[in-house]
Length: 116
Image (cartoon, rainbow, N blue to C red; front, side):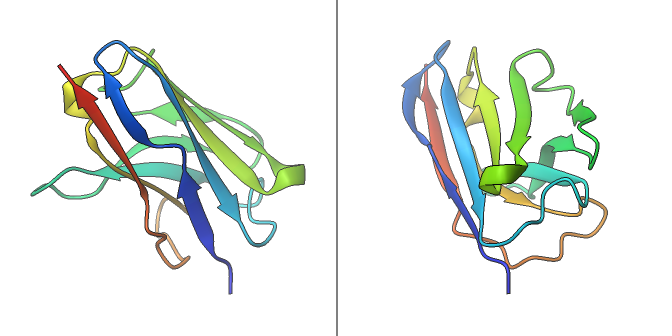
């Protein structure tokens, strides 16, 4: 069974940057549309960025222009470059897919905390 491991989170000041990684135990990228999700305390999990099997990307309006999703299929890894971080970006970030119905077991996620 594929396992997803997210890493790269941390505490950063507003305006700062972080790069998240999602390592998969199998070759799942460039097969389905994969996504980065986040869940803030008391909130529902939301999709913030996605990348299709052929590299097309989409972003939630709240992160457009600040976040960049990418992947390295050879390394079975997906990334989320986050810049100009805001306090409202504070959440636990997860990866999964396909985005229409995530089918892999959810990982533990990686905590991103942005201080004002």
